Image (cartoon, rainbow, N blue to C red; front, side, top):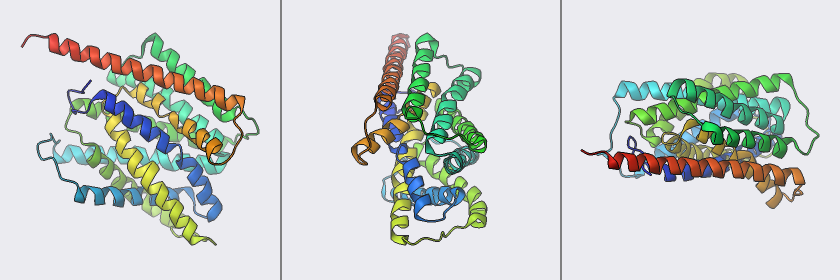
Length: 318
């Protein structure tokens, strides 16, 4: 099940995306805790998240042996890809944190992650020629229904129009980033590590002036707790998750990527029940099962299609 362009097996790409989605599931809750700990704004949080992730990944690249036999795109193309990916990441991440601040974690998550698969499915069909088919469309629909039931099933949410617009902007940035990563993965010469480092460098540079205006150093009564939260955000849902995401998104169909990343609210819900003692409601259970079923169905279909394509290539006489 290997991808002929990047060399990464599709099955491993699916696993990378599952882990990334689970790690992303902790970012929104961590952001809420950051807001409660000090007066840090969403742009400053995004800057420190990307800057911290950049430092961590750069340190890993320094100590990791470099594979000089791997294909590499020309320098100009790598710079262009880093700029485009970084711009999409900046829009995705900052608008999401701003939406959380404006309309709450539940609504921001539903709108951002709910609009993402729709935009990506349309973009993948128009730009990449990727078709989901009837089964794929049913899986996407099931995942979106599960998302709404899981996040909003408990009620008690309020909707702020400004927050919804910010969440839609976040979904647009996420969709552009996913589609570009997939297209470049099919073209070849991509390296997930350099893509992630380049994206974080561009995003940090774009956000720095706005974060400086907003306030880079927040006022807080618990600086130690705030530093621990920022370190966690930079390490797990950023450096780890995005490194895995860019690797997996290059070899897996874009619509499948978008649905697998809906594991973010699932992991957040599981953590809330297991670690925070929240009650397991019928809505939580039903939404989780719907989303997990949809993710599993698309993942199995993606792996089956990859095996079929591999068998067809092997059958072609040389």
